[in-house]
Length: 605
Image (cartoon, rainbow, N blue to C red; front, side, top):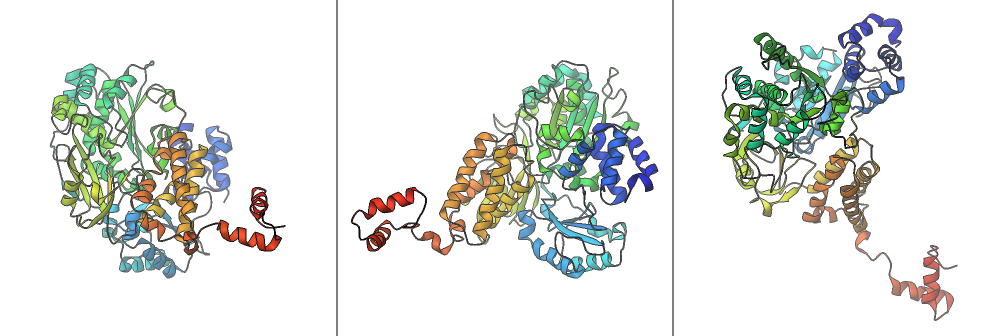
């Protein structure tokens, strides 16, 4: 397909929509792909020419993200969630069933170009899985009957927009509310309180509150905002990180659907505190179904004077644009996210300088998680002492948790920091617990003997993903899934992570085929130590945490998969000496044998 020859007006329209701005490249590629179904070479060339960019820069961005396609895909692109909780609920069998109904192989396009079926990482629907994406739209609660009906709709080429509405219904599943989720506020109330306090007053209250980042890192929010406010320059940027790609987490999705105004209020509060005029919400591609409603609400706020010109008072303007990701877990890291905002591959930057001084387009930029911003809005409303009174001395406030896996009531739970994990699990209806991951794939895995530990930065720090596994589960399958997740999601920037994650995946593959040895378990331990000390960003530093815990705390799950010969001595010295004496007739066979082995020959000449 020659994009220039057959679609010049569409391309020109897309480029005009994005002001021919090179930093809008990722959004432009989304729109071009929506029009063509994929990104053919001619389209990439035309985009590069229209933006005045080297073609290699456009191709580099197009090839980096999982949801951009530089090779043809099916008219119906079906992606099953491959997170461990979806697998536990039967996703692999459902995927195989759909492939059989459509007469195609997983990961390939049908000969007539009708459909392609593959897997993707966690879709953020772990509380209502198994789930899939079809042409970017999420469908939860899959069953055999639904799969069969879906195959029929695809074969009849029924547009996805005409599929049954109830298939696309996404539920919030909020089971416990506390200070954040139970709060009721009036439109404009937060902005009025923030304007009354002023920029310095807001900064002081946020610092007094002890608010720490809710995305997992726990960095002090007040410190970040003050550093951004005091950075040189007269333009600043606020970014809401809604790229929650951690397996097992979905709490930001629920906050965006149930408390979006509070999140936007938090962005406005941050903008007032640091002096920003521009804001971005970086929305993960798996949540694209939220986009129309979120954009509509932003438009309503502009009409209401709660966003846009003068919304922060004293002539201070602030507006927000929603930037859609394209399937890259690494973009949850703030500097990789900023690279993506600028239309580039989402690879972490070398730091320093830090985003608070040199962020989006070189401007001072404060990046905060969805939950952090929503909480900051309430701090601006009620003051720092209000949050300080909740939680612990080192972890003020509450934590919103996404709980999935072997529990009776998967969903969203908000607890004060300091709550014992066992209390959280009891609320969700967990029984016969064998293991719990407390930060998705990128954090510790606790055994049943550790459930008295507390949810807090000083004990069990978590970004919100809690996955539960009962004693019927084979934890090797969890390790196998985690290893392949990180091997796929490593951006390749640094050698320790690029190679280490691939080595771990191969070692787990060997064990899965019962061809592994104790050496392979030791090698994973070495990879852990290497990646911890040498990886460029947080992905490499956390990619082995769950694996390390699983191998050490649940070793029998791995030893069961060792090759049957793995338990035999690799080298029997006495037997080798006897054989050497027999063959040489020499009493100094020990020296003779040793010289051959040290030479690497391994056999008698």
